[in-house]
Length: 129
Image (tube, rainbow, N blue to C red):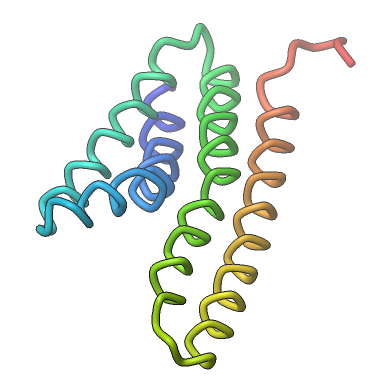
């Protein structure tokens, strides 16, 4: 039963890990293989977190907390991306980069709080508050 949270939660962690870790690494490596490798490594970490948990509920809890951590780091990647966009002298690019970064920051924080809430509610022992 821990395989289901491992695969589904691992895919969530994989996608977020690719955005937060894989894309900045491949910017310097200049090939798409780094993005695929980043996804596979992050998914393997998610599956590993789930498989080491004692129960399926605890597996969901661990994977959702890992996804929340990555989702809270998600906006930092796009603030960094907007720095690269705003190096151009045109003010339109500066405004576009700031607006895009703000929008993705709100999405990242929203996802982070949602995953944190799911992780907090999932896998709790009966009778604990």
